[in-house]
Amino acid sequence: MTTAVAIKAPPIQLRPHASAQRVVMTVATSCLGHADANQPNVAVGTPEALHQFRVAYRRLRSLFSLAREISRTDPQGMKLKAELRDVTSNFGFARDLDVFLETNPGLSEADVAKVEEARVAAYAVVAETLASARWERLHTDLDRWLDKGKWRKALDDDPWTGRSLARRSLHRRRARILAMGSDLAGLTEHDRHEVRKEAKKLRYGCQFFAAMWPGHEQEIGALESKLGKLQDTLGALNDHATWEHVASATGIDATEPEHLDLDTQLKVAQKLVNEIAAMSPFWRAE
Image 1: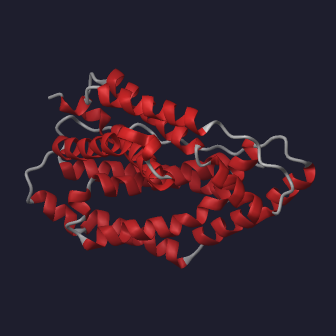
Image 2 (image 1 turned 180 degrees about the vertical axis):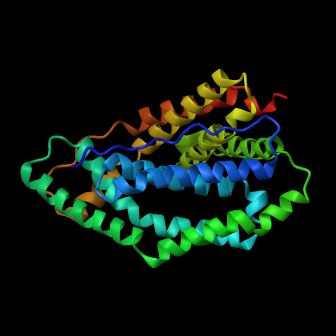
Image 3 (image 1 turned 90 degrees about the horizontal axis):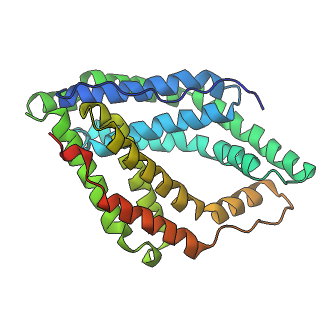
């Protein structure tokens, strides 16, 4: 594997009283810049670059969800969000294989060769997607929507500030986590995954809007940390499904390793949800 550089998302710079339109434009531009910075190294098969590339587009899709008051007034926005999700799904299997190789160092040479062969094919799909007319058209449509979409006029006609947009979106995500996560052990696997997605969106939202609350860096960092741990803990519950998917697709002979005890993981995750509930939301500050 190549050791080319991967670029992490830079901090987003916003003034405390930025307009809602300015907030959306700044965050969207940052997400697209993050993706563009990593795309050259994705093309040569850099695992961490692909990870950051996918993160950039997940962050952009999260912005559409967080700012739903904007995108739902403009059908083109919802169409773009769906297209983003559909096209970037082509990158998922390559990332699964990268993580599989990294987290299973005890694989036999024969099994490593099988996974590597599948990885080469998966990265070929990534390269084909990035070179496609569909990908180019999606970016053209995104740029046009950001520059001239109906959402801009909707915000011009609306007195919302960036902070009011942030408050509503962050409150909504936190409320969903606390409501859905009040009894994680009683949820289905699908519903626990939904809690994980909400935690991810709230964590991204904290990163997007943090600069509008200067002086609250410690609180924001603490919340981000809890949300990240909640994501990781709930994500670990999906290790079995990932193993089965990769093993079936590659034909490896290895025996699946033992995963962490479900009850233990759920207790850890529940403790994190309860700790998040006890934290005072930074966005309530003036």
